[in-house]
Image 1 (tube, rainbow, N blue to C red):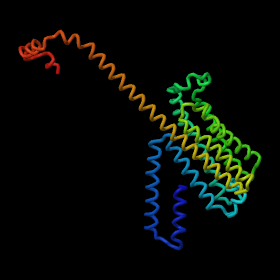
Image 2 (image 1 turned 30 degrees about the vertical axis):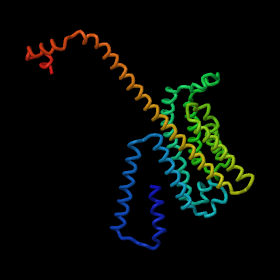
Image 3 (image 1 turned 60 degrees about the vertical axis):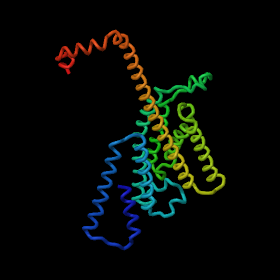
Image 4 (image 1 turned 135 degrees about the vertical axis):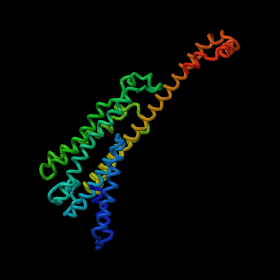
Length: 309
């Protein structure tokens, strides 16, 4: 619905002054409804962590854009991002922004369950790298899906409560919920090496790069006054969602690799079992004269094997 609102608003601005009759309007609405129904069917039929992340990103982006378009106060960006969720920005912006946050938090909770399931699969098949087995600390480093789950739930809960308590109602409580979500994400970024030891080195470097980007965004806002608080909040959201996207795709790739490895090991075991059975049957087959066996089949036109076949 939000994407359709944005699309129709842009069309309205592009064809300013155009009026359509009932037939053309009905065709436009029915076509948009059919496309949205198909996309919803495809999105829900194959639900996993990767598809949920795409849905979450699209939903949040469209909700924020609609809140900006509906804001009656055109200078909202001069204060802070959360001002879109206040009555001063307008009733439409107030409900759209806060509803977007609440629903996004609920989707993030569902996404957390999918991620926890995938991380639990990886933790059961985790093997320490041979080059690290000589270090004593490496024996205690194992994937911690439970800690990752609670961190993501803290982020989701913080996002929900940010939408429930707008900044103009209780600024201190609103700021506390922002800190809760930020603490969960910072713990994930700083603890990837300990919480996710089986992940590639490039992913851990990506996490450290995200931390550096957050620190740079903070300096641009606080120390160098390059942009205001709204710019800093937009930069933080962009960095965190980029990291979450990389995290999801890395986990999906690891799950796929593990499945391929298990299939290969299963085929290898089956091949070894067949070779073992063939080797066990060779001595018995060697004691049988092939000419006598063929002669026996010729003499007995109604062989038992053929009858059973």
